[in-house]
Image 1 (cartoon, rainbow, N blue to C red):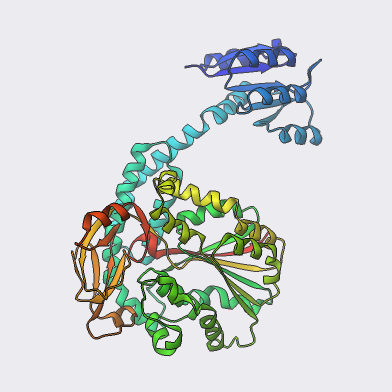
Image 2 (cartoon, rainbow, N blue to C red):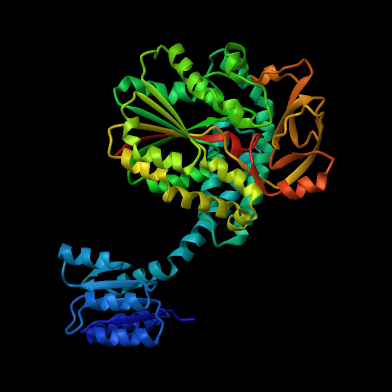
Length: 519
C-alpha cells in the first residue's frame, strides 16, 4: 500500500521532478499551492507525511502547521524554507515539526526524510535483528567456551542491549530469550565452580581473577571520592537490574557525565545479605562475628535484617580511617518519604557522604507478585522494564537528580541485587525452621533436585554464617523457584511468573555501579 504525501508549496511546479522521483519510489503524492488547500485536503483525507513551505501567500507555513496539528497531531510535518533565521526554526520546532529542511532541497534528501519518518523504526528493527542473528553464533560459542567473569559480564551486557532493541521482531526476540536461558544455565555452573575461591581470595585481600563483590563496592567506588573535597551521594536502588538502569540512563545522560562499572552480588542475592555487606564492607559471616548486635538470623521478614545499615556504614568509615566524615543515611520506602527528600535534596550535599536507599523497584517487583492488575500491565520483561521507566521518569527520584545536576557533587548509583522472572518450580523439602524465601533457603537437611540449585553444605566457604552445625543453604539456578510438596499446586499458581531474587542468575548477580558528575 502506497504511503501518502501531502506537499504544500506556492512554487510546486518547480518541484515536479521531486514529485515524479517520489512517485517512482512508490509514494502517492498530492500537491497544493497554498496553506488553505492543504488544510482542506487534510480535513478530507489521511496522509502519512506533510511537506510544508514556510513562506506561502495567504495562510503562511507556521499558521498552516497549527491548523494541521489541530486536525492530525500524529501526522509528521516537515517544514521547508529559504530562511535560516533561528527564530523561525525555534517557532516551527516548538510547534512539533518532525524535521526542518532548507531550500534548495534535492529529491534524495526528500526521499531520505520520508524513509526516516515512515520506515525508520522498521529499518532500525531489521538492522538490529540482522545484527543479533549474525552475532548469535558468536555469543553461543562464548557461552560454551568457559568464560571468565569479565566475559560473562560482556555477554550479559550484549544480551540485555539486544533485548532493549529487539521489539517488533517476535522471532528474533524468542531466539534471544532462548539464548538468555542457555546463558543462565551455564552461568549457574560457572558461579558454582568459582564462588568459593572468590570468597577465599576476598578474605585474603586478593583482587586478581575475580569480580568485585558487594562488600567491596563502597571501598572501591565511593570512599575514594571523599578525598576530592566534593560532597558524595551514594544511591542504592534496591533490586535494580541492568536493563532497568539503561532505561534510567537514557533520561539521565543529558544531565550527567556517566561512567559504568560492574560488581557481582554476594550469595544469596537478597537484601539481608548483599545490602548489609555493601554498607558494612564485610562478608555476612564477618558481620555476624564482628557485630552480632547488628546481625539477626532470618526471621521470615528479610527487611528486619536491615535495621542497622547506618550503624554499619559508620563502622566502615571508622575502619577505613574516615572517622571525621560527616555522613547521613536515609531509607526511602514511601512516595511521601521520597517527595520530602527531593524537596530538600540540596541538604544532602551539605554532608561529606550521603547514602540513600531507594526501595521502589523492589516494592514493584514484590507488588507484581501479589497484584493481578500489575501482572496485566507488565506481563513480560519488556512491559516490566517500561513500567519501571515510567515510574522513574515521573518520580521524585528523577526530580532529585535534576536538582543535583545543578550542584557540584559526585553521585554513585548501584544496587544490592537484581531479580529474575521465575517461570519454573522445583520441589524442596525442609523442616519447619527452614527460611521462606523462594530463590534461596537455609535450614537443616534441605533437599531438592540438584540440577536446579547450588547446595552449600559448608556455609563458611560461601562467606555465610550459620546458627547450627547442620545448617546449610541452597540457591536456585536459572529461573527456578522453590515450592514445598505440600500445597504444591496452590503455591505454583501463586508464584509462577513472578520476579524473585536470592538465587544465581545473570539478572540477579551481575550489577552496574555508576558514577555520575553534572555536565
